[in-house]
Length: 82
Image 1 (cartoon, rainbow, N blue to C red):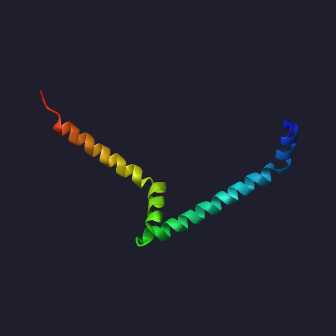
Image 2 (image 1 turned 180 degrees about the vertical axis):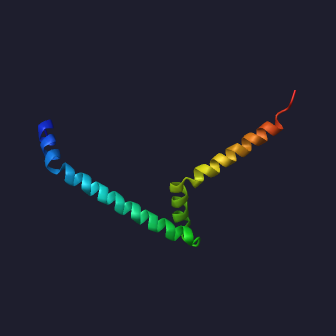
Image 3 (image 1 turned 60 degrees about the vertical axis):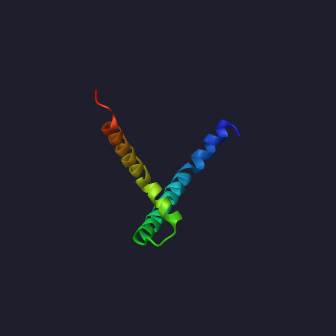
């Protein structure tokens, strides 16, 4: 496919593609919000769902940061003073 053909195809269908991607994105976002609310409110749901929600929310990163800060504090407290 030549560049001119691609440009013509984009001109003909680009707006439709952009609308389609925007609508798909909103649908996925809405589904994710509903799913996460449902799973967060019910801790008996699968551990996989919990891990996905924690991962997407950044909870794992926050927990790791807190552990690293704790280790750094421990390291500072344990370092010998001269």
